[in-house]
Length: 610
Image 1: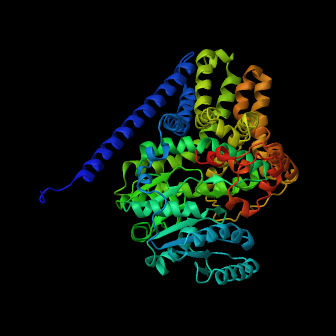
Image 2: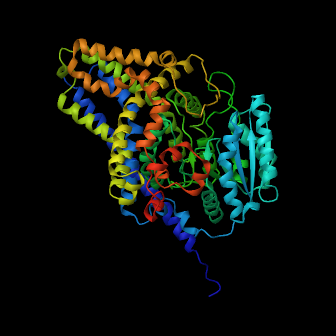
Image 3: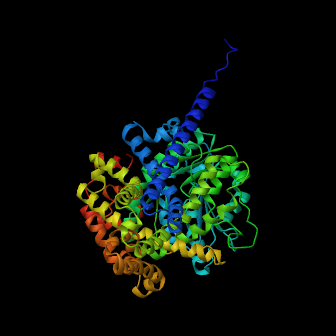
């Protein structure tokens, strides 16, 4: 009997691999079939009088927009099915969580990496303190070492930074180690900051928990992520789901309410078929240091052109390089693993988004990198299409407006019946990730209460739908102009971000957004003069452009934001029943919502984990 080898783990691993291949094949098939069907439907709708050059151009632009729309739809559909019919949705898509009970000792040495640049030190310390307190209280503070990795260039902020973090180090001395380091030159941006840590201290730690300046991770979440990594030596990166922190900014509140609606179903659905080729978002994740140091360094691209030099968007590249090295990358789609602060205004949101746009365009240099897994190549292409689809949407509006205006009648340009069917299908696909979560919330009494009750929740859904329809075209236009500038050699570099609520003056909004306004108003005016009946359809894109200036001003209005908190518009479960750690942050949104908040009970306490 002693000669018998137990190969059950290998058998289960092989079976799991076959299952994942089957899932990916099925997903690819349904996505391809859906895209072909939609293209056929548009071609049939445009075939009135034959297909000409303008119709071909419209078909090409429509095809470019389809991957994000169709993949989002199927991710959400799969995610909803798993949320509704699986006993444990998280374990279904991330089986590694079944290996931990939650009381295992922490044995891995874990570095906590906080990358900052010109951030108010008091705000950063505020976000860190509850986590440090919780880790020390758990008895495992000695297994963690916090590294504050500063690239601050403002000398006044740097002075305050040094004082604040040295005081924090002295406060927790002997209980949790803290190291503060400031680089005088931020070579390589954030990726360079992390690389400097890897070379100086990385070999001293088995794992690293990554934070952004606006991240807040409770100690329980940090311990859970580390325990899963300890039990899963095959995982190189474990990415936690990140949700928006309660905010008093009207823009941030409604935006992150929409994220909350869409992210869970989308992430669960994508994790079902991506499996071990999951995403990395660069923060609120745990890295296995040895393979990260050995395989995930991203050297600067050759100089010449705006896409050369240091990488701006390092996170997804780290994921595909880790997977190429033979380590798995998984997403853990739980909503209690950490929060982040979103930009408080449209203008700040655009600034951040354009930096991501330039960084994602640099992925063009890595798509053909030898040794990447097929799903990893898909991830890079998908990240490119996130922004390359924007010019296609704007092109559909402008070319579609011109084609309708020049046609003898709308029916001579597009078949009304097929055109309407296509529009309805696309709208359903646009909103599928959010529809999935709305269905899930409405079917669960505890979740309805967590979001402030059915009426508040539905009112927030309506407000977010309007918000999304106005915001999306503004961003598409911004990406289009920015990509055009990249072709002409104009780059954006690494820019700071204002995180505090503030008003946006009408004059500033007009200076920044007049091109959007001009295109939106122009398209509406052309249709008003030629085919007024087409205006309602064009408004799905043109309205956001035409209203860009008032949208920016109103959603940044501090009084409107505070009113939204008081009436519960965009309410998150954390505002209904905030955790002790969140209460310790003293967030204004929690203080304003407090008097109108339901008292936390067993159901409302558990709802954020549902």
